[in-house]
Length: 565
Image (cartoon, rainbow, N blue to C red; front, side, top):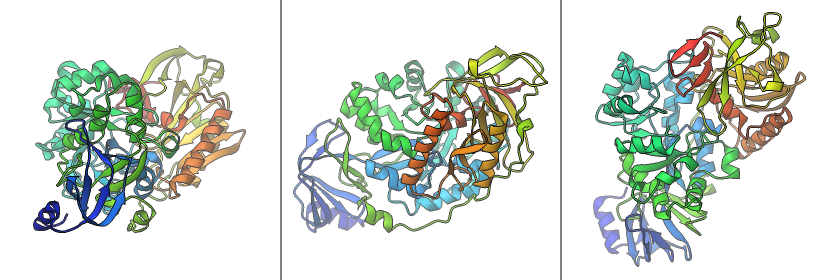
C-alpha cells in the first residue's frame, strides 16, 4: 500500500494516479445506485471515485459496470485438482480476487508441510489467497489419515500474512461434548475467527456449537436450516460446488435484508465445471435469474464476505479500499471483461511474473498390491447397510437391503444398483481395507478408483467387478494418485494427480480435458451421476450424515460410530 501522504495527495488529485478507469459506472453496494465518475488506483489501493482524475495509464471502460472483486469464502483448492497457481489462472479472470481456502486435503496427506506449501504459494499468486489453518486433521477418529495436526502444530503456523483464523471445525460432536483436543484448538483461536461445519445441527446442540465462538456455516442445505443458523448469529455461506449444490435451496433466503449476513462459496469445484458453468460468477447470475435482487447477490459475493471474515480493506469500490475490481458488461450476466487484483490487471503478463513454489507430497500413494479377493465382503448377515447417494448433495441416505450370501461373499447386484464400494488405506500406516455397498451410481460394469477421498484421502473404489476394481486401484499407485476408470481389465481413462494424490502439475485446460474423458468413460460403464468422482470422494467423509465408509468400516454418522458390515 502507498504511504499515507501519497494516498492523500493522489486522492486530492495533487499527483497522478497509477491507473484511472474511465467511462464506467460503479455499483454502490451501500445504496444500490450506479455511480458515474473515474476510479483512480495508486499501487494496490483505490484512492478516488466519482470524480475526474489523471493517471499514468488511463483505461477506457465505457459501457461497463464496475463491481468489487468476488470473494470465495470457503473452498479447498485441492478439490479443483490443480495447484494454487493454476487455480489462480483459472478463476481470477472470472472475477474471483480473494479465495479463503482450507488446505486440509493436502494436510491430511502430508501434515503441516501441506499448509506451509499453500502459505508460500499465497505469497506469489495474482489473486489473494487466504489460508485458514486446518482444524480437523484427521476429521475424526474413525479413519486413517496420513498425518495428525494438534493445537501445538497450529500454533507454529500462526502469524503468516495469509492467515485469518481456524478453518472449518468439522468435528462438531467434539465441540459439543468438549473433547480435550477440540478445546485446545478452540482456545488457541479464542476471540479470533473460527469457521463452522455443522450439517443439520439444530436446537441446543447448535447453540452450544455457536457458543464456542464459531461464526460461519457452509453446510446448510435447506432454507429452514439456514434461517435457524442466521437467527442464531451465524454467517451462512451459500455453497455451489461440483457435488454440493445448495444454491437453489438457499436462494429464497438471500434478500436485501439478509444479504449483509450471507456469503457465497464453492467448497469443492473442478475445472470442468468451472469451464462449463463458471465459478462465483455462475452463482451470481444464477441467483439473479432465480429472482435474487442484484444488490443482494453482489453484496453476498464481496462486501458481506469481507465483513464476515474481517477483511476491512476490501468489498467496496471506494477510496482506501484494495483495488479488487471486476468490469462487467451486465450485472445479470456477470460476464467479466476486465479484472484487477490489488491494482494488478489480471492477464498473461501478471501470471507470467509470479514466483514459483516447489510442490510437496510426491510419491504419497503406498497402498498394498490389491487382488480380486481384496474386495470380497466379510459380512455374515443378509441385512446390509447401504449408502444411498443423493445427487447434488454430500449428505447420504442410510439404506438397508437384503443381499444374499454366496460362497462367503455378498456380490454386487447391478440389477438393483447395489455395487461394491471399498476404501483402502494408502498412507502406509496399517493396510486397512473396508468394503460395503452403495446405491446411486447406476454402474453396470467395470470400476472407478480415486485417491481424492475426503478427508483422509485413502483410495476409494466402486465397481461391479472385483478384477476391474483391482486394476483401477493398483493403477493409482503407478501414477502417484488420481482418478482411474477401468473395464474388462483395461484402463479406459485416467488423470494423474501426483501432488499428494490430489493435484495435477498440468495446466488447468489439460485437467479439464482429462476430466471430460473420465466422465465419458464413466458413462460407458452406466454411471448416471453428472460428477461421479467427487461424489465418490464424499462417500468417505464421516462428518456428513447419514452413512459413510472409511478404511475402518461403515460409519453411522448419526451415532458417530463404526458399524459392522
